[in-house]
Image (cartoon, rainbow, N blue to C red; front, side):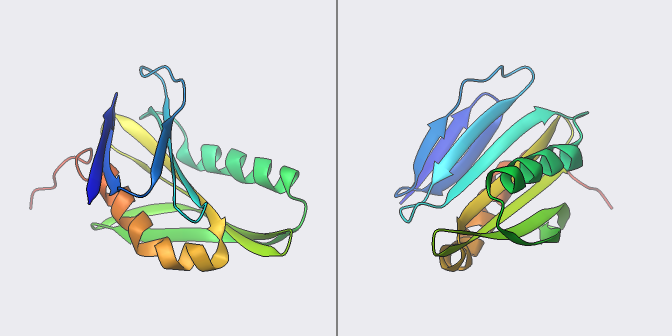
Length: 150
């Protein structure tokens, strides 16, 4: 089964076995929602006004992670295409205890919002959930993007 989340300016569908949590936000300027998978991976959406710098927000997220976890193994540019739209950001890996953790931060600006997405999870779980994360992202941005006419 699939659940639907719709609060403020963020709407998406998600698997029923994932747990959703809202953080206090000022819906006029920002909004944050986090989903947790049954295995403990997290996917967070940050919605900001359209003039927010998504790249800078991702850079700040990555800097916070590299400060917290000094064992960052690798960091590189990240790019994915979802529904014909390019989302850019950063992907990094670090060790926590004996686990290799993957973190991906990527963003897109729509007509009235800039969305920043952060996914973090143990490397195997990241691989298992990659298509779910793509579907989650698509469900957020598909209604927000202006339609293109040819």
